Length: 187
Image 1 (cartoon, rainbow, N blue to C red):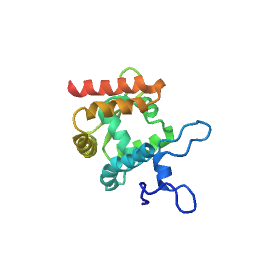
Image 2 (tube, one colour; image 1 turned 90 degrees about the vertical axis):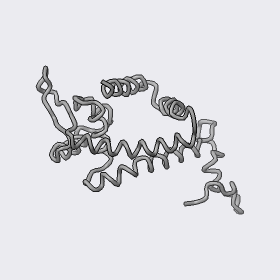
Image 3 (tube, rainbow, N blue to C red; image 1 turned 135 degrees about the vertical axis):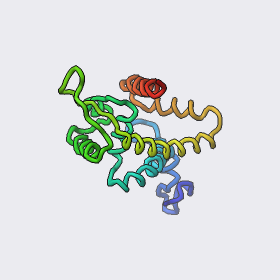
Image 4 (cartoon, rainbow, N blue to C red; image 1 turned 90 degrees about the horizontal axis):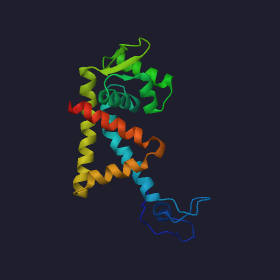
């Protein structure tokens, strides 16, 4: 990988890696330079954050979509398929393919709704919960290492930053979803 801390201009006067990483060039039409370092750090952090679970999932011939489904179904037992589609922002066809594999291999159960038999409610099996928790533990270890490097207040600061990154029109719904899952797990 190129050294992102190298000099800004090479001998030909062209922008070097530091221009890209440091945000020296203005974004077209905005008057502001992109925040390249944070953009790239988010890419690399995400790569490594999902990389640990990816290795485990590959052993089952599962991918990131399987991980996301397991995560949310485990956190929200009895979730409607329609709600999962909204959260993941994927097509019904994409979810159907992933869900079929998880159901067929015994990680997720689908049940009819008590009041509306057209509803499909999702639950993880013991096997699905174990895999979901294993993946979450890998990610928790990475997060805790980072918090340890940052010191007191890191969790709250990270939570505020990530919340602020969510679109305003969706922020309250996301926070309600997280809060509801935390209440369910405590009870």
